[in-house]
Length: 396
Ligand code: DWN
Image (cartoon, rainbow, N blue to C red; front, side, top):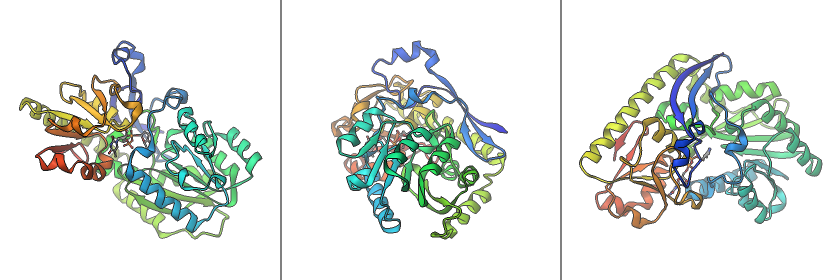
């Protein structure tokens, strides 16, 4: 049974950066109600309204993983680890995006599956066999017919984007070799609750996983988690290493019970912790608005840095527009000269000159705080300040 614990109001599609913002306000049906639920039985946290997948993941998907040095480094290290620990003959990535990870593999040892055509084209052009498809049993069968079973299947920030989890894991079950490994990584619900990072909820993130929920979902397919790594990407993620129960090559590491115990201790099997989170989200909104309004009343200029999908949730939930944030800067070409979804705030292609007369930077990409702070030392040196709403709104 699903119990609602969070209401984030009416929201546009998080990655729908529009050229003409008026279009969105006229077409009110482009907004949807964003509510978040906890399932008392499976302990899975999910959003209410599921949007048809082709509305979200299509030929115009703007997000590119390679836009951040942090992600490139994380994927480089992951590649090294996969080769060292599993040395797969064939590696398959579901949701390969612009190839940030796959580029580390040799062309004849890796296969990509990516439903957004504009991204699938990139890995195809790089020379990797790419299936421009949504992940399902049909594409799994097609790949298996051509290549046989796969030794390592990997998906980062992808499984939480697919509504039908049974189909996801069944398709992986179908294609994985007997001693094969599935690695998935997604934002950690525990970190989200601790950091009050309610912006992890938007239309694309149908689920935010806990290790407890993942264990419950995969057991139907005779899969089990044998290792969990806590990684810092995307505001704190978990990397789950999963195998068939009868695969005896790998022992279940202590990291699994450690993570699950942490989650149980935090109260994540009970509704109460989610209600508490929801109250903190309301406080966070009030505090952020107060902070931004105070700054504006002192005639200071605030801009946003990193036009993230997460920012869409914050701006629309808190009702922040260009009266508070003048514009956003972002390195992603496909976001340039467009507007933040649902809000009249323009996005400019990042150029350090755009920071010249800025007093405060709101970190839309707070998850890349270290990378951004390192890049913007000069802004800080001349007295510029940053604002982050995570863990609670503050200036630094
Ligand atoms: O799951 C998802 C994650 C992985 O990526 C997707 N559903 C959508 C997307 O979410 P997001 O937009 O919240 O992700 P990021 O990775 O936090 O986005 C960072 C944004 O900030 C990108 O647009 C690039 C930009 N950026 C920048 O302009 N300068 C990032 C860095 C590090 C920078 O220095």
